[in-house]
Image 1 (cartoon, rainbow, N blue to C red):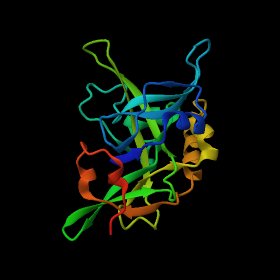
Image 2: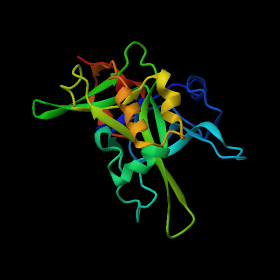
Image 3: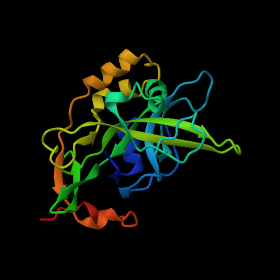
Image 4: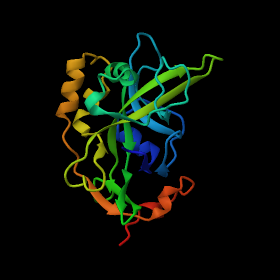
Length: 228
C-alpha cells in the first residue's frame, strides 16, 4: 500500500509540467503527506458551456468516499489495480473520474529485526515529480449541503527491485500517458483495463530514511535524507 508520500515541487512548476488550465486551492509543499489531508490532484472535466471545463489542479482529501456511501467513516486511501473495475467502491470512478496524484516519492516500511524501517522511494536523481494513477469522487453529507471531494491512489504488485521492501507500489503513469489516463471520455471497462495494463513498471530508487516520518506532525526536508 501507499500511506505516506512527499510533494515539494512548487505549484507553478507542477502546473506547467501537468499542463493544467487552472488551479483550485493552494498546494503547499509537504514531506509527509498523509491520509485525510487536503492534497493536490490533477483531473479533467469537460461540460458544455461550463467555465471550469478543462484540466485542473485541485485540492482533494486523501481517502476515497464513494458518492453512494451512507457516511464518510471508512475512507479508502488505496485501490488495487487488479480489482479496480470490479469493486463497487471504485469501478464508477475508474470509468469516469480518473486523476493523477503528483508526488516526488513515497514512503514504505520494511519489517526489519522485529521493527519497521522506513524507506523513501523515488525516480532517482533529484526526486523528480511523478504522477500516481488515482481515482476521485464526491460525496454529499445527507445531513446538510456539504460536499466532500476525495481521492485514492491505485496500487499494483511492486517491481522486483523494491519488492523486498513492500509487495505493493503505486501505479506510476508515464508522462506520455497522462492525457490518455485523464481523458473522461474513456469510459469502457475494456479500454480502461487496457490503459492500466499498458502502464510500465516504474524505475524506483529506494533509500533508507529516519523513523521521524512515522509521526505525521514531522514535516521537513530531513525526512527524506538517506541514512546508513
